[in-house]
Image 1 (cartoon, rainbow, N blue to C red):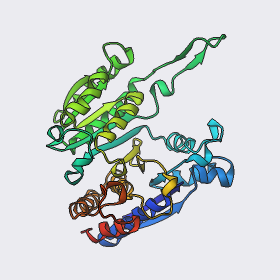
Image 2: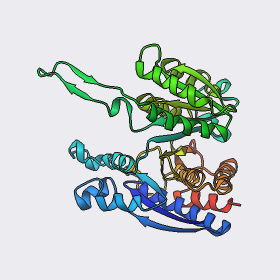
Image 3: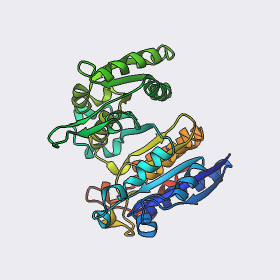
Length: 354
């Protein structure tokens, strides 16, 4: 297979971790007989420094012309003085909206070797955690009508969804559940919100086409409690934009290892943008101590969702698991013991690719 990938190293540790992910992708291409071509674009703070904007039109067009995008991280204190519409983080919104990415997949996994890092009791995570938050990205209260009264003392934000918006992401969630544990939980506030009641209606209708997947419902306040009380209940957790924003961050923190977690932003076809959920960590940029595993796992998600290369994605994920099982640790997960650098971590994962 020929793959065209746009790389967005970004700021801080972004170039360091993207470099390791590219090494892994190149090894996969070599072992499995694929061809990969890369184009690199600037986005975030580095683009502000060069072009006075967080994302140029040319950069977006390059991304559009590719099959998938791999992003490192953007932002940092250097650009805190920049006005809101030109902040580095606007590059992410520009890419998501410009590329039509409406669906966010964020897996939360606790690896047995790192279970001690979780803030949850061992009794709660004894069977492990492996859940997937599916968040709608382009609708809801973040994109609804908003405003203030003339005197500035009253403000409003509108949560709005159409049945088409709900249907398309519900299908993504059910398709994901089919290759996992066949269980979708819709998280909403249907006892209060009319938009949530529409979500229940539409998702229930979509579920009829997925008889092999079970569906249950949970109010968002209860879901936030169950994530820390019984995270094993969840397989695929489907929700709207704001609830997903909050719950995906909660889910990531219960794993205790934010440097390990990948994500994917998708649209209706096979195109996607893949990135670690952590920030740019400019204080350790170029020091060879950043953890590249989340970015490497993001590359595995790319192979799985954009290129349907399940065997290759499994190979990367298994190589990461083997490295962890063999005691490979970067500084952030070393718990005071010996640790390897960014490049050595990448090399250890490369050694275990089969």
